[in-house]
Each structure stands twice: as C-alpha cells, then as structure tokens.
Length: 326
Length: 171
Image: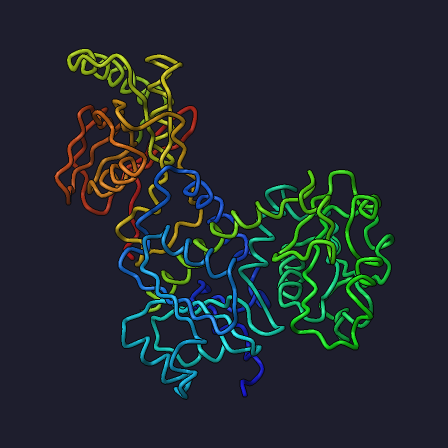
C-alpha cells in the first residue's frame, strides 16, 4: 500500500529549481513557464535533419512502466534519445517484480547500474512520490502517470499546445469533457490551467463521472454539453477509461456518445476558432467522432509532437537540478 | 571604459572591409552568416547590412551544447536555433560579440555540424578579451583587449550597438 502523496516541494531544490517532476500542484507559475519556454526551443530540434543535442550525453534514463503505455513511453524514450541519453526500458510485467522482488530491491539494483533518472508510471496514486522519497540523491524521478492522481508531463504538453495556438492563457475558457473521475490528466490540467491564469476551467460530465470534490480544484461544473461548451476557446475531450470503470457508472458507451460525444454539430456553441484536444488514445465514436478528431480544429497529433519537446525540457531541467543540488 | 555607437560603427566598418577581403582571398562568393545568440546575432546583422542584405543569416543558441550545462542548468531564456539555409557544403561566417575562453565557439561549431558539414567556417568577433582555454582564434576581430580576469565586455543592442566594461562579482 502506497500512502497519499506528501507535499509537492520534494520536487524542488533549495533554490527553487526542478529536481523531480511529480505533480503540477504546488509548483509556481514561473517554473511552469520555464518548462514551456524551454520546450519551445526543443521543438526546433525536432525539425532538424539530425534530431539530437548532446545535453544529456552519458546519462542513463530508465523507463519504469508498471502500467501499459505506448505514446507516453515512446515519447519519453524519444525525448531522452534526442537529448543523447541512454535509455533502458523495463517491462515490469516480465521483470523480477513478478518473481517476487520488491519495488525497493528493484530500484536499488537499477541505482547500482548508475541510473540518473527514473520515468515512472504506476497504477497506484503516489507511487512516483514514494520512489522519489527513497531514491539516492542525484537520481531524478519523473511521474509519467500515477493512478488517478497526476500526469504532469501530459498536462504540460497540453499547456504548450494551448499556448502555441492561443498565444497565452489570459481570458481563455477551457472545457474538459468526459471521464474526469478516472482522469489523472484532467487533474493535472486543471492545476496547470489555474496556475497559468486561464480565465475559466469547466468540466463537463455526467455526475457519475465527476469526483465529489471537483469544485474545490477551481472549476465550474456542467452536466450539459451545450451550455458547457458555450464560448469556450479550448475543448479537451478525455478518454472514457473503460478499463478502470465500474459498470454501474454508465449505462453504455452509446449512451455516453449520445449525450457527451463530440461531433461538429455539438461543437457549435464553442468559439469558431476553438481548438479540440485529446490526450489519446482516442475512442472514435465514444468520446469523439472521427469528423472532429480528424477535422480542422483538431490539434491532437500536434499534442504528440509537442509532447516530445516538453519532455525534453522537463528531463533536462530535473537532471541539472539534481547536479546543482550537490 | 565604454564604446559609443559610433565607436562600434567604426569597428564594424573595418571588420566588414576585412571580411570582404578575406572572402575574396579565399575565393568565396556565396556564403551564409550565423550569429551566436544574442550579441553575436546583433553583430552579424550589423555586418550583413554593410556587406549585402541578401546574405542568408541564421542564429544559434548554444545552450544545448554548453559543456557546463550540468553545473548551470538550462538557460532560462534559451531560444530556438534558426538556420534558414542548408549548412551542408556552405561557407559560413560565424559571428560572436566577445571571444574569451573559446568554449562558446566550440559549442557553436558542434551545433553547426549537427546541421551538416560546412565547406568552411570563418570566425568573426567584435572583441577578443583573451583568457583562452581552447585553441581558438578569430579570423577577423574588431578589437583586442587585455582585460583582468574580473572584467568583461558587455554589448548592448540590438540597435544602436554600444559596449561597456563590466566588473564580475565573485561567485
């Protein structure tokens, strides 16, 4: 059993630099902006014919995924490789933890291999905090998604995408639609949007897919799609997390699509220049229609591209934060 | 000690003339200019105005190539490098404002080679203040100064360009 996450400041060095990236909550606006600015220059590296810079040459990055992932894991791997780091992918399902090795034994072994960074995805909320609290100093930990708690690099790539298309956050109305209850992405997005100064963050979902305390995060709650989408600048559809869902929460996927699925007609109340985002993987015809996912307002694939640059920024900042703390 | 914009202009005029001569001696007609962010870009722009406005001009931010990254971290205002021309096979005039240890130039050349193999590189700097740590020397230099270790030259720009000697505070 992993306990609830301790305070977020284990993420920062004494002088306020990033050394682990575990949660958006509790980070200052200036640091989030530093990540976005850093990412902007890494985007350019992705356009080069040789997509590589030597910043993390000689560093070893370990992808520690206790839960399946394709996009997040491969973009972290690409980000590390573009920074010239060496990458080790540990497939936990096939590793010794399934032979009874404890998590700490496994970490100590990886540390003995002189790893510099762990990228952690885990189904238990707080697992990356636990690891960050127990690793040797000098090893950076990045949360690649923990339980229902947080997915901070996804939120930052979403913030990058919004800033890229909308120029900033001031005056922006952002709607997050769908399975907020199971979504660590939504929680991290809500924190990031509020820290970065968006005017209004809305969540739109049936009551059964909303956590009870959601208003306390600083959002307005809508159960009706049409009124929730009125005049918004950014529409974020969330994946319906069937694998985490208790059957009692929803009558059926068809019923969800009928009420909350995004199609061109339903998007009409949003601003004409509103962008449509989705953290992926998308369920076509469940939370989003193909005409929207593939349509002119969709920036879904740009999110993926920007994700590499944002992860490059977070990785470089936390590795240098570790070293500066010596 | 300081340099007014007309002091700087004089040096830029002389540098442009020396550069023209050097390119001619080497038989180079087509070339591109690359300024190192940020002072080098200002100097490159000023030189380009004196040579020919149509010379392709790029900028490099060498933050990702610094050899002291792990001590100093990512520079908070790192800018994208922009090279709006093919580096492969191109003669390049690399421009910086101040040459000191030579580490910035090494980083800039490493970065350039990640874009392609230039035909040649000519190094042009407005000031050379010594204290070299790597075997680098400018092909064209506006002014050579012998400064004590705690002093630096700081260029102010982008236009008009002026410069001052500043005192470094001990870390």
